[in-house]
Length: 324
Length: 263
Image (cartoon, rainbow over all chains, first blue to last red; front, top):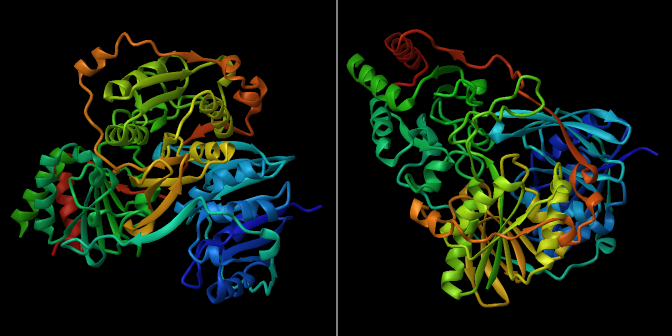
């Protein structure tokens, strides 16, 4: 019997996430022979719309319609999924804040293997799947072998599998709500606190001078402010700078911060984790300065300089000011 | 409140450049500086702050070899009350499920209201907390960046979701939380703090003490095995500017002007 793969569909406001397409490609890459089914949880009208979109990608869509899923809660849907996903199946989930909440525990409840944050699939050998992951924030990669003979839950990194246009699966929607049952929620959603807007809206900036851990000390931020002033850009940063409370959250670029689309992006002392890069859209011209020649940022930047930003940036600022 | 915090000893990426060794079997571990996983340090700080508010005890647990003891001791120097090292040859090569199995056994030997882990560690998996919660059948919340104690039955947690937004939840105790960086400002540990706990005995427990079947953990019990380490070749990469600093800067200013990087 062909392997069964399930793809968990994320959605918001009645619109399926980009990962709905990506997981379909990932499933094909994992096992071209497999039967692939989408699974969507939600409630009412919005869920119906998402199911329609998923049916354009997948031959079959399983829907779980339950008022308790109107705001998606991993603690509520996990036992439902554990009831309907058959033993031995492979379940794909996007590796983001919901997937990270749902998936590790789901693997336990399904008694299946767990393989997190996969960026590539490299074939099956019997019951074992070869896959590619990254470690140390992308500084090194690994090949891993996962025993999927008794099923697996796999989280897939958003953006790792490029979607293709025009699939038009014309799939059918199957209502699994009854079979999925209900759950007594031991974790209850209260509200979403929307991020505060800072004094500068970096999502509108054309030039971003972005600083990371390489700045080493709060006092050193002055050299970044001076460079930003010299080029007429705004200051943004990577996560460690906000964690240290050196700049406000509204200045953070990344999946857990702002999504920016400048014309020019200067990454200064930023190693280039996928979470950071995930917040940069619109293919800006990217300049990277980092003292580690192997920093992942150099793989995505257009121009790179191996240097200590503490020495390099002040000299660059001086030269720019002179040349005006 | 009885709080257990799970911590891991990892190579310190702020102090080291991580490189693949010559035959690709591991990262190059010569001269690596190790420390407590950054996320775990925030988890320990949060546990200490909760205890200071509502009372109770903080226990720090680590799975590892003898050298993990120094990490547990460092977190005790921060203010944790107890340390615990889970160490056994049979644990070596455990995957996430194996580690969660070992921790579950340790949890069941004690009585805890709250378990904290870091949101992720060096391998970026973010898996052990969620697995442990499911094994214990306790509720779970990941990527937690706010904890507010509402009593001894439930707490309020904020989760970091996309776009810098925060998802607020109420969660029943006992529960497991994975803690995100930035939730607090972990206190500095000085030499004096380390000295104060230098002679504290940290109990060590193995598979037999915990009642863990040796074949359920370790390399043998693992469903996920790492085959190698490598550095992928991704596209062309950046054009690297070379020469003297003056030459590099001159070239860079020219490029920035051409690309609209200087207004």
